[in-house]
Length: 254
Image (cartoon, rainbow, N blue to C red):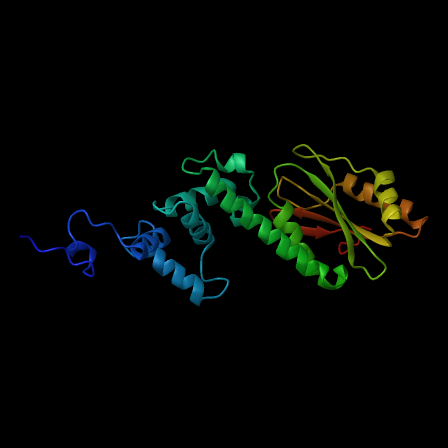
């Protein structure tokens, strides 16, 4: 009579038909296909290091690891960075655009989208905690995350109370590749409706350069003049581009 299999033996000794243990399945799900230990090393660098412990493509890679556990996603992460230009470009890309990349399905696109949402909400929360004017870098970080890599022009208005704390962050226009309408009357009417004491105008330049045009300066002066008669201050007009940002006030243009 043959001996019964030892139920407490390692899997390879339990017999041909033995099923993997629950913890073995869990380990496979966590590490994915990782014969070289690359994923484990990447995870350890993330946990042990600071914000700069992973390169941009490795941040994308780690997110993809959670969505595509059984595939080497390093090449895919590099393709995404090359296609969309930067980490922020990937996070701001539309899911439909992401899924045009071979290997990116809904689950992976959703993982990348939620990372972008988290980054924007964190930056906005930081900005809301105090006066916008005294947390200027937090404002610029938030605007850059949201607008620098858009392929169309967007106009937003930040409405502030008398303490210059954020009352409302409103996108007032999403335009074509290089133009978007700014309606002075609507902006000032909204400020009055919500009791705003001041505002900051913001728009992006899809071309990448944040240098202001003559039209940018003229429309800003028009809104300043309209607000002045109603006790509403226009603190600044900030232009965002992939190459940086420009404050019209800092440049002495308003």
